[in-house]
Amino acid sequence: KYLVMFFIENNLDFNRVGFATTKKLGNSVVRNKFKRRMRESYRLNKDKFKQGYDIIFLSRAGAKDIDYNAIESAILHLGRISKLLIKGV
Image (cartoon, rainbow, N blue to C red):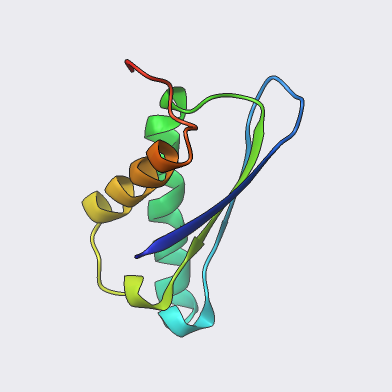
């Protein structure tokens, strides 16, 4: 509901991750703050993701007023439903 995730296998031993926001989210200050929060929530949870993928996280317009915990929850949820999360971690 807040984020969209695109991924493809990259045949490397590590993930390459990109973060993008839509202009509907707000001005540049709001968009950059949201990207920093997405980046940090992925950084703290990157050991839970399988390696060898190119991943892009894209924000949706309805994500304007959510807090850090909701962003982290959305990233983990997307990883879970796409089967990119390592089980048991």
